[in-house]
Image (tube, rainbow, N blue to C red; front, side, top):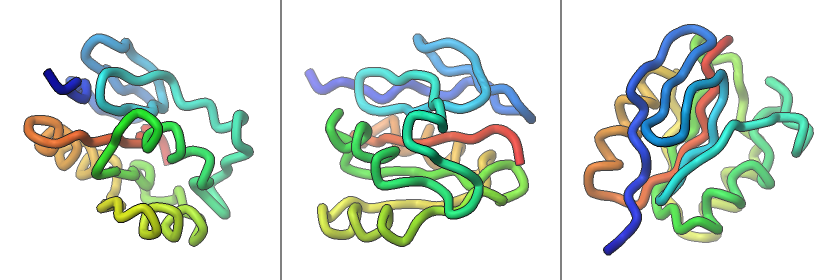
Length: 122
């Protein structure tokens, strides 16, 4: 059986709750699980934004579609190189404000090998 991506059961400013993973501020989620997203691992900052290295883990875990949250106030950017990487791999990507990103991710998780990066503040 294919591994399902975990559902996000709660989203509010500074707090996400993920089924089977726990609660925290920022998460990397993918088919079969997820973990806290530590921006320091890849040098991610609001600008220039989500790094290619941030999405590689999602791809390595079999994500066929990726949802990138832009933060609750859409302040988190995405590096052009990150979008190029996903385009080169033929991966569908959605960039949305965090609450909209959570809704899209949860809907996709019902039927799709979806991964996502979720930022619960600005």
